[in-house]
Image (cartoon, rainbow, N blue to C red; front, side):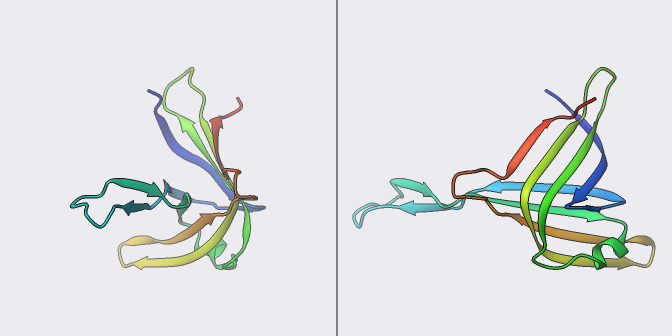
Length: 136
């Protein structure tokens, strides 16, 4: 099992998302339970369309303020290796669409911006998610 360490870089299109704190990636398809009128329990489950959601938290709120809702581009995250001899990992989401920008200001902590993205497929069959070993 590969383990990965800290986020070393994050970019959205041509914009560097400096000060990355965390990235949360969700790949899901909502279930659509089916059954007949005489069934007491669900007898079949079909899945809806797959959705990829991404949440990126960064410390540089000025960068977040410069982004626009609806803006689209490639979201790329570089993650470091945790031990010597291991290479890091690159996660890329093509056609990531910025759907939310939230700011959090606390009295005893640095400001944080939460950027929320949804991935949009170029066509109905191409998965916009890709993860690969980083190039040394």
